[in-house]
Amino acid sequence: DGGITQSPKYLFRKEGQNVTLSCEQNLNHDAMYWYRQDPGQGLRLIYYSQIVNDFQKGDIAEGYSVSREKKESFPLTVTSAQKNPTAFYLCASSGQVSNYGYTFGSGTRLTVV
Amino acid sequence: EDKVVQSPLSLVVHEGDTVTLNCSYEVTNFRSLLWYKQEKKAPTFLFMLTSSGIEKKSGRLSSILDKKELFSILNITATQTGDSAVYLCAVPNSGNTPLVFGKGTRLSVIA
Image (cartoon, rainbow over all chains, first blue to last red; front, side, top):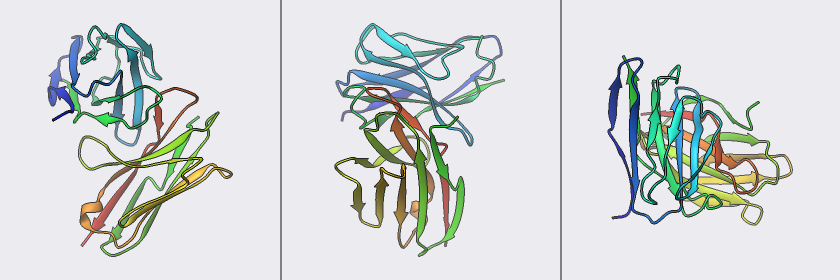
């Protein structure tokens, strides 16, 4: 079945450490997105990618980095520069950026301890 | 300031009640407005409303878009406990850009 997989589901990190969240899709979608969700804040865009080897910053990109070396994969690295990284992270994909039928992954809950 | 504003932020109703969730937006070059339901983790798509499709209905859920007044409502009739979720409204900011989401409305339906 086609879908989008995020791993791990839960992640604990010590302050000062970088951590990478995985996002893989087999939907043959060109566009992929990372959103962050905090209680009462809705979803806020971190980064998005319209095509392989290209990505753009979203509204809250500081302290995060991404890569898009393969169409299927869009990993997100939370760096030590992110001041408040504890949150729920959602990855999504769509055919193109102008196609709003997003498919979401099940998310990764990151906790900094 | 927020481009997508949802209200109320939370709501508690009894089974069988009818609820109306609100979403107002402010974007340039409006293209579409989407509603999602988020029960636990992954949001699932409900409706997309556009200039050519301002009313959508699926079972007990329906949605209307008012392009003049820049808002949309999501109605749920005869609510069930399974309707308990966070309902998210989203619009593309402008042109071919990713969706901007509101903060969501947390609906709790109690038996």
